[in-house]
Each structure stands twice: as structure tokens, then as C-alpha cells.
Length: 149
Ligand code: DQA
Image (cartoon, rainbow, N blue to C red):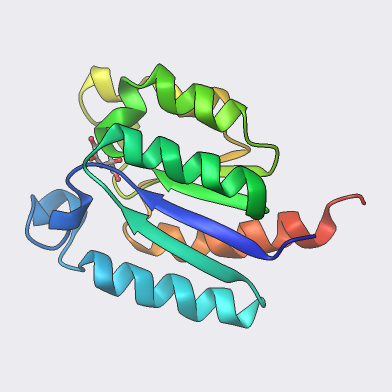
């Protein structure tokens, strides 16, 4: 089985560290990528790490992952709450899907309580700050390693 995982980040996550630090913290997406890669190396996983503000780019990366990857960790940003198209793309992917939110979306405005992506996700992380990404990588490694062949 492939040991490649995609870590996908949606709109506004390029501003991590600058945008609403009281909610999202001071770490940048570069810091997140460094943490993700450090844990991935521990578990022998390869990582493709991407961010886009454009829905179609996220969808194209999910399609690309269909051919190559064992799992996708995705923080879809606000597309979480709006995008049937991202849900459809994830439903066309056979590997594991983990949904990762930096903030605890359930403690926030009610429009953040619904997630289209959760209809597909094998697990959901929320409110663990940027540390949630590394925890998702650990979980992904476990899912891949214990998958029944
Ligand atoms: C987020 C939560 C979303 O509601 C929000 O639109 C984001 C970030 C999070 O990581 O906490 O952009 O996905």
C-alpha cells in the first residue's frame, strides 16, 4: 500500500499566524508543514502538503490523490461548511480521510457546526490548535498500518 498522504489546507490558511491569532494561534502554515513532516518521517510516510484559496485546486489535489495516496488530511477552512463539491471529490477517494480544524468549530458560530466533509471523514479533529495536524498524521499512520489487506 502507498505510504503517501496529502495534507490539504483551504482558504485563508495561508494567513495562519497573522489572521485572528486569538483563535488560530501564532504559528504559521510553514510551522505546521514542518511539524507534519517531522511526524510523517517518524512513521515512514511521504507527504504532499498544499494550501489554496480556490475550491477547484483542492478538488484537483483530491483527484490526484485518488491515483497515488493512502490518505488525505484536510482542513477545508470555510469550505467545510459550504462545499458539496469537496465532499463529492472526497467520496470519489478510496483511502482514509481525516478532517482537521485548528479551532473548536462547535464552540463557535452555529454556521460552523455543520460540516459537509464530516459526512465522509473517518475522523474529525477540532480545537487542538495547530498541534491537531501532527495528531492527525499519527492517526493516519495507525489507520494505514492496521488496514486489513
Ligand atoms: C477552520 C474553521 C473554519 O470554520 C474556518 O472557516 C477556517 C478555519 C479551523 O481550522 O478552525 O477557516 O477550519
